[in-house]
Image 1 (cartoon, rainbow, N blue to C red):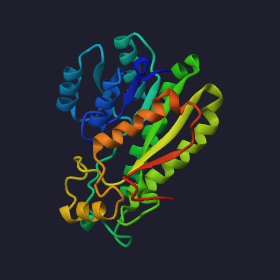
Image 2: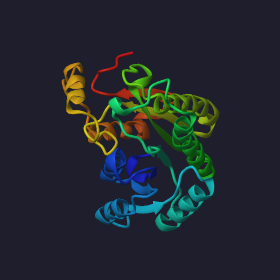
Image 3: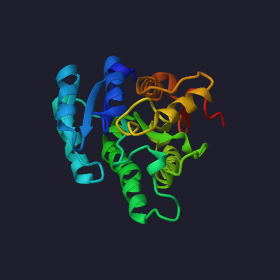
Image 4: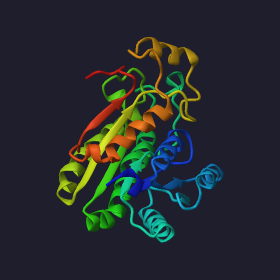
Amino acid sequence: MQLSEQCVLITGGARGLGHHLSLAFAREGAQVIINYHRSAQAAQALAAQLGPRQAIALQADVTDPAQVQAMLATAAGHFGRPLTTVVNNALAAFSFNGDARPKADAIGWDAFQSQFEGSVRGALNTVQAALPAMRAQRFGRVINIGTNLFQNPVVPYHDYTAAKAALLSLTRTLAGDLGPDGITVNMLSGGLLRSTDASAATPEAVFDYIAANTPLRSVTTPAEFADAALFFASPWARAVTGQNLVVDGGLVRD
């Protein structure tokens, strides 16, 4: 299915990386559901910019399955077509500032639980809500947003990295389970992006260090990362599933 024929849910689609994901899919002609939790103003402004035939801003806490179901029902009524693609981008509150992160002797389980709820439970809820439509079409694309900290754990983001690692495992088991239905499930993993709301607290010296150690000598931007997400939703990725593509300018190469 061409991108221009797709109806795409982007969780956390109003700000930061989500904003750029929404713009990238809309640019290719897809109809976009801009999901938000608290960022109503940003979501509605983006939807207005794209126009009602191409985008709708809908509030839902993705950790609540009933809210996710209601959101997709509203979107189907608005666009008159079923959902084809899910981009699980929503992130529980987090600040990428390594100097301020709790170390192993101080971090509490509540921090882990918050990240697991946002990353893993949120993704499970969106996939389960989307499955009836995807199975009926025998077509579906699920793209989960991960991190290169699996391979390069240079900062002690224990809770965030553990949750994203669990999401990678879910990505691979879902790929095996849903493949016979024509549904692919993949992960797109980035490093530090320059810049998003979450990385706004990152010291400039950290950005400079990453750029100096990356083959492209630059820190990946949200727009560059968002463009890579289009591949997994496109016809060119129709035989790709259960994969984790790292998009960080070549910083991590294994």
